[in-house]
Image (tube, rainbow, N blue to C red):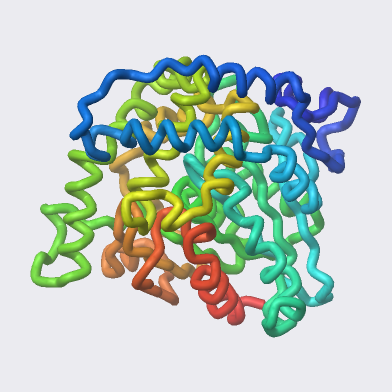
Length: 397
């Protein structure tokens, strides 16, 4: 059995058993980078009306500038070195090779924490948090707030490679996380996630409630207000409905495609780096707290490292497929979670949960509403997220 799918550049093939944990170093062969550059050089650009704004999709002049920077100024090898400065591993769970970061704290009583990103994110979101989380003493914090941190890449995303069969759902990923944490020696741990990662982290409380001590979420999509459920005299519920309308009638086209025929968009994203860049960058532009440029909220290199990881691993279609798998249960009531839960609400996210709705099926013990930040909180406002994680999890050590 290979240590990783052979279609993922930079992953070596070697014989392992499923329970093996294999150290991993990322190295993309130069021909794969040369191919990316050649495709960017040959990109075909549409003729678009000059007055077309972001409501038509990411604006052409801005996208062309991002593509130019990606081709000529972005340094993949520097990002590769940054990633490789973090301990990485692979293991096989449920028939799929899983890539993950695992950073143990120098503090002996550190609390194990599993972090899960969403779509269209990657483990890159959490790189700057690893030091403060694992070694707070070295970053101006209290040693008692230390965590052992595990950041798995969901099957079908970036360095875990494409999934090759149907049936990968939020529940299946949560079960894989449960296996991984025990394989690493953690029989009690806490979890955090946003977007898809929030769904997985919440589901961990259902599949592994005896081990998951508490969960911290950036989002509870089922707690979003709708015109039929909201009390419009309450400002937070009115804002939640406004977000609902904007997503329903302006921003949600990507989800409609990925939730119905994900392979249709997958073909284009796998063949064209400009298409992959536009598909992901549009989300970063619409879902973050910015003034018209992604760079107001998230660094350009962080965005492009995530885009490059999707491109090099050919995981556009497999990551999109989670939407199709998820539509089977969309709209159904979520089972009540028995795990103590905290929610951090960032105002520029694509949806704003309402506390009274979240309380219906969660043991809600903390609710924090911030005045800045959006969907990619770990990149946009790492200090706010770090502080909320530390404060909440102190009670569960």
